Length: 276
Image (cartoon, rainbow, N blue to C red; front, side):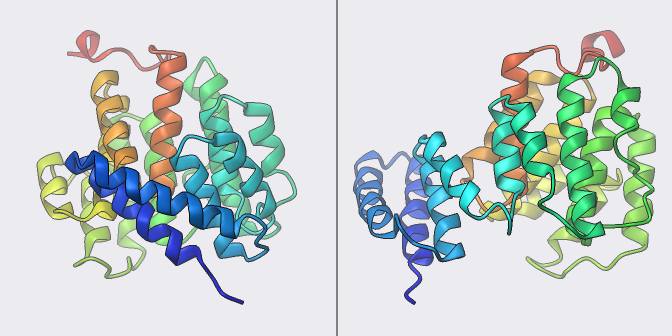
């Protein structure tokens, strides 16, 4: 079977670059090409094509069709569907999507993380969030996603020093993949408090993937510090990279949407002005 997932990614990726560079006319041409490819792939039963279509529909703002596509492969990869429901404030649907879709222990760790996010958006205290997710749990995700989960939850419930300790403890016990010149070691150094925001962005360079992750981490850190406007700026920068296959992209959009719904969220984190 022919797989067109790579074909539709090409014009969408290029269109993202055009949006960032202000090339409006060429972007329009690319999106026309992507729309034609989407029509050809509409009835595909191939997982990679279904996923690429979901990302395309989400990219062009047709979220209902994106959700329809995500439901086709939720038994295989439910995270995008869950985070889209969270972004839209459809928390009951997000919880329902989590149920029965991830049978093994490692997958259940992911479900615990997503349920914790939902709880955080509905709770009125950090204690309610802490009860949902054990940062020191015995089952771990792969190093990249375990760091992401621990850092995110800790940003919501812990002081900076404790958050840094959690992330440092994880980093000392795992081997991060050596992708992008050791990028994930740099990311874990930032999460552990050993690398500055400026240093993290310098390490990310011009890589859209690294910038997507960097801005998410920076946004979560600013949220933890009570600087909600700065957090939103970083979440929007992460989303603007257009790296739809990364959880940080979807997390950034979900957290930015939550701040739209409730500009004072989380209620238990005081504004920076009152902490300083």
